[in-house]
Image 1 (cartoon, rainbow, N blue to C red):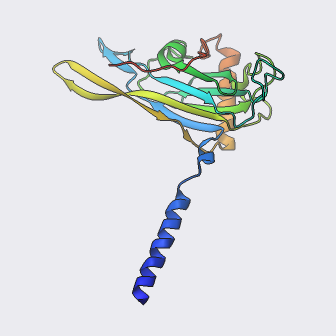
Image 2: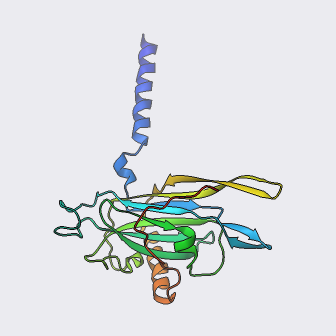
Image 3: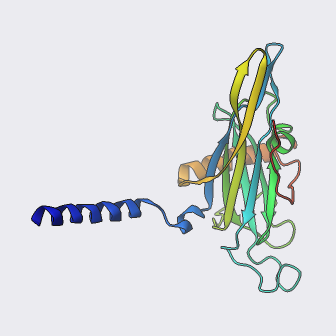
Length: 230
């Protein structure tokens, strides 16, 4: 009897510990999120060339508020969020930073090749990237996110963004044929340290101030984007 009680107590403690290790859903809706994309280049005449694409979709889930009657009536800026994106190559270099305004219940999309790698700060093709997302409170009007990716001053970090992305994975390479399949996974929540926030702000401000238009958004797609069969 004593041994059985000990075993039951151990199981209860293990169950509670396991449950506590799983973050609540609210913990997944954070202002700072990260993911990656790979297999973005192929060899062409011995030199890497841009080839496969990846897509990122970012939704405003309303956690930062929303107008009771929708954006067409009253204060249409309630709950708006700036989605600030940062794309790094594998040498820790910031290739691209950008900000798009997202209204409550809206989803926007980015094509890595069309919107990002087609207008990088440098011309070096990269096979993999790290993508970081920071949500900040938007100002009023359509320009409420103008250059907010530079995180100047003391930006207000807000929850309310959920994001997903695709990346191509190599599954077969034989007889001169290469086959890929595409997976889609969510961005993962991360902790934004003061050092990382300063680094993002400084590097992005340099791009916006001295990049002559390179390394910034070509467009903010107002629709979600999907991958294609490979």
